[in-house]
View 1 (cartoon, rainbow, N blue to C red):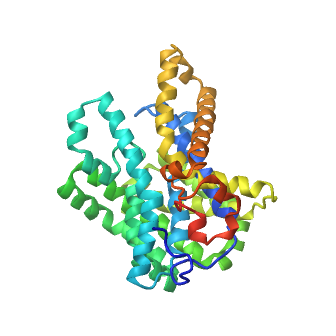
View 2 (tube, rainbow, N blue to C red):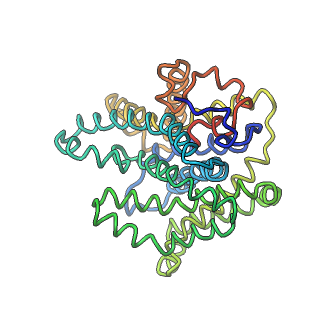
View 3 (tube, rainbow, N blue to C red):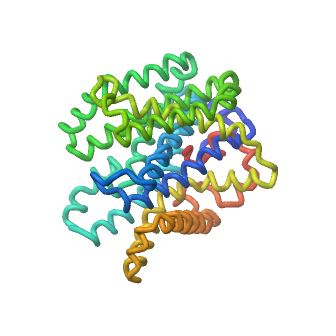
Length: 379
């Protein structure tokens, strides 16, 4: 049952859909496809190459997704009763959890066909719970956990935005070891991965909530300083990833390096995204692509598997040795994913599979809805 959109205490105040969030989601969508396309080049101990640098640059994708979710959910939630919270979770279950379960079943089937059926069947509940049904799905259970924490996080972000985001970074510094150790004792390696992802991305969710609460004041500065922030984030990210700051890895602050560096980069990208002014014809196209981002996130690994299998079957595996082929693969996989999502989103019976509770025609007037409903999966 769809939440009552006339319940003013449940919904976010009616506002114009913000193109900045849409641009961030589109950029993150393309980047996450690129990360997975480039996995074929990721060899432990291999020398740093141009592809390695590109791969590292694209890792802003998941932090940006969490940043946008933090801004729209933790920064915008105004529920004030258990009933509001129940309807909020019901909406997230429809738009996020239901498609996640459907695609998890597909990926578990693929894994079973390619490997040991008994292992995948026996471990299916824990694999789904921790997002290990396939390599990219860990994101969704972490996001669902953050949804569950919304009634606690949103009031804190609303009342004390600076303390809230500072506390999140302190939590990353002080709790990562104990949280992952607890995960290891309770559920083994799969739960360790989930716990590490949750505590790491807590800072990105909190940063998004802070941005939403302080946007009016900080956005002019971010729009002005975005080149400095983005350059600092990229430089530090590449330096730590390629070993140019080896001493840093031996300090107590090492565990916060990635969240802090990514925080700088994400804020720089946010400043750029909100600085860009799209014309009227471009805005609905960007809005639609952003609405498809969750579907692309879910479906693209399956298409990438088909693409790689086809390349191998044609005896053209040597093409992966050329960086231009990686670019071509990125374009092909992204284009195919968008085409499939558009097809599924065009029909009410299948739109839920890609996180859209309504068919594609509902996206033609994205400014006529509340902000939470305007961003179906808050990715």
